[in-house]
Image (cartoon, rainbow, N blue to C red; front, top):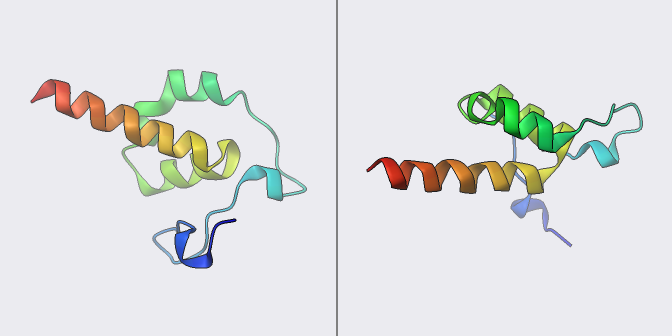
Length: 75
């Protein structure tokens, strides 16, 4: 289980939680969201918060990995 210090936080300091933990959260097709909007979501704090909340921390990490590898290819 993740320790409180391991949980990512928003720029405002609030802990980012997954949609799985939110009773009123609408589920999204996160693969489609990442394919269509991943680059844009990865560029802003709000986009990363959206992705973490609605698609989970695994999707956020997958996007970070993808963007990091793309930056490496451009260099």
